[in-house]
Length: 363
Image 1 (cartoon, one colour):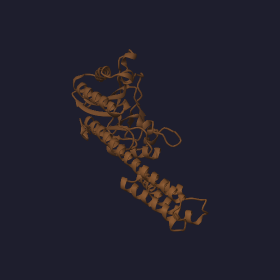
Image 2 (cartoon, one colour):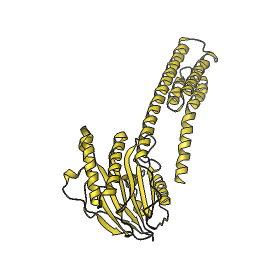
Image 3 (spheres, helix red, strand yellow):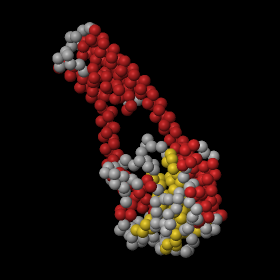
Image 4 (spheres, helix red, strand yellow):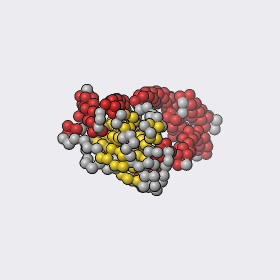
């Protein structure tokens, strides 16, 4: 419902902007005719093509410019002013602005095409390294969801992966610092290292160590700010086969939520705080996994800060725990869909960060 209302409001705003150039011309003609000669409607006629440039096509902008030019000439000639210096000056002014508007429209269209191309490439690259896992993995019901931020925002570095291994189902959700293709490249490094380590390493702590070393190697190939400040917050989880427990290693990431079958919600905070991946050389403590029960019917929710740091118009953060308490979802996909819709409602559709969600339910 909230998403439909937001789309309807956006549609009304777009329609109003597209009608504005025509309304300026229509309003300018009677204004020029009905007011004294010292008053002129030139501001109306020059504004119309400039307003049209960013929202109309190249042809549409040219048509609005021609209409403004015709209206300028008509109000002077048809209503008795004749071809005098004022008429020529004002007509030339509108003609010049109309030409500039056409040029501006062409530049904007070219920039839009370039931005769209870059975004499509980045999205394709990110989706290639973030394949959707099977809905049933290792005996668990699994769902993932990736919510991009605003359409004009760059692709971020949110990531997720699910791997069924000899040691249980292993999960990772993380957030690479930065945006764009550099972040997507780091996501590929983390996902690749995780999939290999999840199969080979006997402990979750060892998996985290492999990710740390992979990011350290990647940082050595970068230069400047990225080499010094590149890091990834991440939470890794392990669901041993038939064990009824979950083990978690948290590296500076928002803590997972454990949703009980009775509607209770527990925040799985780490016993000891740890630095993000890629910053292990700044802290000497080894990783230590926390273990807790994972009963039948419970759901483990992992997410990035696009969820927990989503703000409303008053600047208040979204609290997923508060909204989820008392609610029971038997389908992880339905849970993530409802949660994403609630975040859009909270922010009014004005999210500023990408959001990755991963839910695993033990039947």
